[in-house]
Figure 1 (spheres, one colour):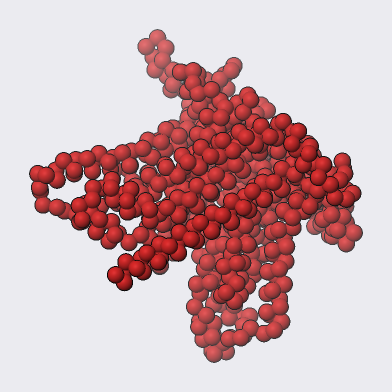
Figure 2 (cartoon, each protein chain N blue to C red; figure 1 turned 60 degrees about the vertical axis):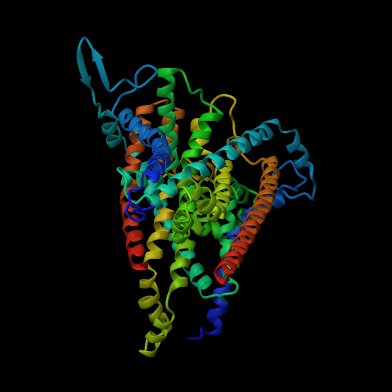
Length: 279
Length: 320
């Protein structure tokens, strides 16, 4: 069935309009970061002054540093916990409390962040009242991000683990490999791309998070999104635009590099697999 | 490593390794399990407990007390009564549902044709289109809401464009903005911001069901005399039901609990439940009330969530 000409054009126009809608705000944010005007919305010509201002902006920069540290730790922790959880869900079909486990793993994905933040905050305050720790700050923010990051990492790694051919692991076992050797030498290398995507995903999620951080932060622990939120509440700030532009560029490079590495690993694996089956 | 799958005959040399395997297994299961019990289930229980307590001087009063050899369990449902009696809370729940539903409808309206044309585009360009839909995910939620603040504030070019084309008059007539030229902090800016943020969540599941559809069914419909329009409504739409439900839930559920977008783009009249909980905690310091509101919010999303799970399970059943 051939669609008519008008339908084809209508379709293209709809797609184009949709992409304009998706990208115009981001492009606009970037363009206005180069605006040479103290009034954020009035275009007065090109300048880099807001980038100079940004370099002098202590709050934003220290927030960025803290956010990067938390995001790094969150990504690493999420990948470890997520891999364990995914392995549990895929490989161990039966153990006591499996239903509850799978429910708890995916619950943070759908639970409103406000609720997760509130429940963690109230718990940590109660614990602190009882035993004196933890002090609210970077550690508590990290724990909160880890809970949500683990859920995302589990989904990503689980999808890959499920597609794996179990015969490869069985072959390794039959050849005398111990379970831990099978895991490190066979399973893990085969899911390494998904570990990288999970790492990148949880890193960006953590870098971006406002609500959990707001609930769990303490004095002196103000992440970059918290600084941005408090300024955005008051109005527009071209330094925020400059920051946004820098983040978009870095993330774009990171995503491009990540997808390239994943694609390359995928190709290499396919080649090796082909060579193995030929040989 | 399924039990029975690798049933080696009892071999004394292997018994040791089997024991260590059992240890490895419980460590693999135990670590994430314990973590979730401590950081998911326990906090949840704490919120439930605080929801049925009342605020004391500094901290919520204890639900269970032990005094003079008497164990007392004091459940106080005063918060629930307050919420039921105060129109502000009730209204914020209704508003949350209303705005989440409006956002879902708009996303479906924009996203369905979008996903449809994507799925019918040349197969060679489809991966690129898919990549473009996912790209905004990698930019910060917060910054995208902030971007709309710039566009819709006075002097923002979208604002100016809408005023000069008279679109703001239309919005006033529809009751989405209070006065011409005032676009920010209105139901309009709130729903626009949420639609913008959650549109990819609608498009992706729709695209994956539409791309999998067997196009010969449409040919069959046409051979049997259906016009393309009739074939679309009687064949394509029913076949994409799973995608419609998945996409709608992926938009509706997070919108109910949304905080950042209502805070930045909403106004005084667009009070959503996420913001009310936030204010109870940070402004009023009323932990029990915030907890009770949270428990009620979870009840609100449980029905759509169960629906979503049911359809996901059915779709997975079919795939087998």
